[in-house]
Amino acid sequence: MAKKDIYDIVNERFDKKFKRESVIKDSDRFKTYDEVFDHQNLDHIYVLMKRGYIKTVECPISTGKEANVYKINTKEGEAALKIFRTSTSTFGAFLEYIDGDRRFQKIDRSKRGIIYTWSRKEHLNLITMFDEGLSVPEPGAFFRNLLMMEYIEYEGKPAPQIKILDAEKEEWIEMWHIVLDFVKKLFMNCKLVHADLSEYNILYNGEPVFIDVGQSVHIEHPNAPHLLQRDLNVISKFFKKKGLKGIDQDAMSLKTQLLDSLTEDEK
Ligand SMILES: Nc1ncnc2c1ncn2[C@@H]1O[C@H](COP(=O)(O)OP(=O)(O)O)[C@@H](O)[C@H]1O
Ligand SMILES: [Mg+2]
Image (cartoon, rainbow, N blue to C red; front, side):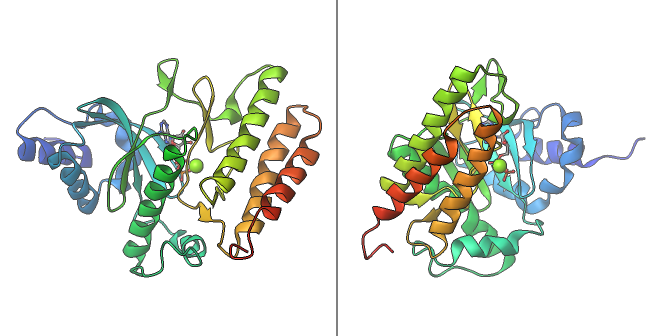
């Protein structure tokens, strides 16, 4: 008899626990996602299932440096589940975005503790942005290193990053202004800087949707001005490649406007 692979084990564990059909479908498509399904993460998924948030885990959407993203089913329909890998080797850099953020003063500094804080930070940032009406996925439940959010879809598929979008120049101009408006509202209304803004972290579902906000820092973070400048540099470079004019001037005047708006206490 063929040796059982990890996916059979995952499915059996879920089946036994929930006494129903396999909740992880299409296990072949999970082949490259092994490392996420360790016992701890499975237990975390169970917790979200027991609490009634997750019905089934459907298929992987993406595997990144620090997290894997899955499409899942909930009572309300489809959603996205971001699982931060606890085996990630780059977690040390996380502290640069946590320390100095007054919202996270006392944290567990073990590897696992830092990663849990990171996902809590993404959850909190998403809530702040969503509540201010910014174009971000609606935040859902979260538990330890697992974060649920609205699934962003376009034409029946996971929404593409604007990096691979084929659009007319007029549309790029419109998107550039949406990006500037996002950076401005994020800073002025949410008091945050994205800190990883790029063509990879903006999805398109008919309009730009901003994602990946775990590293976003409060404007009082000592590095906030530098991170704002970096965000503007990275995203300007992308829009310049689309042949748009006046990008650098737009970015520079936004930066000046935002930094000038800081009160003495916020500096
Ligand atoms: N809510 C979502 N809906 C649809 N796709 C998503 C969603 N969140 C993330 N993705 C997909 O997963 C990829 C990685 O997510 P992201 O939050 O950028 O994590 P990281 O870059 O740290 O791996 C995104 O580029 C996007 O393709
Ligand atoms: Mg990303």
